[in-house]
Image (cartoon, rainbow, N blue to C red; front, side):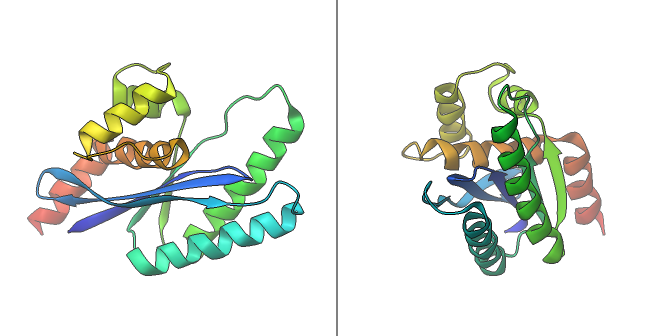
Length: 168
């Protein structure tokens, strides 16, 4: 399997991760899960935990690309700030591991996976299950992370890179 992609759905309490690969012209499920934190823990402890767990995942699976959900517009400035901190930790972890990071807006991810940019989470879960031929749905945070990885895989510039790598 080649071109392993790590998708990340950042959150201070639950950070989803999803790993897919390419086998021929097919996308293949590798693993997904959720990095969990306690809400009562200080933010620095949560960020440290996310970094360490993500680093272990990167070391185990050696992804070539990292796709992360871009910032969404929040009415709550504190929530947006916390999300920004988590995104920053995830991006730094990937970059420190030598992985190129790509960012995708939530609507672009939903559009790529379901064909509709305002799809509900349940629709995204179902399409992830179908696209990766999974026998069950995964938790929403993990499924969202897989959808972000799929979005990156379906990005035309990514497909062009795969073609160029196969020519060499």
